[in-house]
Image (cartoon, rainbow, N blue to C red; front, side, top):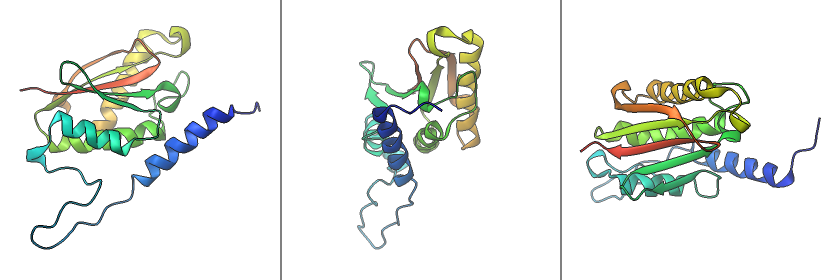
Length: 172
């Protein structure tokens, strides 16, 4: 078995540590005027694309996941292919699952949010558009299994880069 690149190994370990740390359930504060626990999702009524972007960026800080706002006011989340799917496969890998779990929280809280998913083929386009479409469908199905209504998905497509891209936007 070939030795793994030390930088890649460090990135994988950092991603895994950050995602596992985020699995801890914060305790809810009690009493009048108590502030929400750090890292707790905002209340549904106050969730906006901007607040969702901040929540996800904080939760995924130090990982190779890109969380950014677009000029159109949408939220774009990009997860590198190596953390998303095995070569030629459509099953969601654990690091992508952890990111999707966090995205599902915001999508469940805000019924006005919709999402578009683009997934890549393997390196140099191997696997073709069908593989990309199946990977996007796999990510969608994962989110549906986490309580996100199927009607909230507005498109599945092939990503141009070697990342799975989720774009979240407010339909209003």
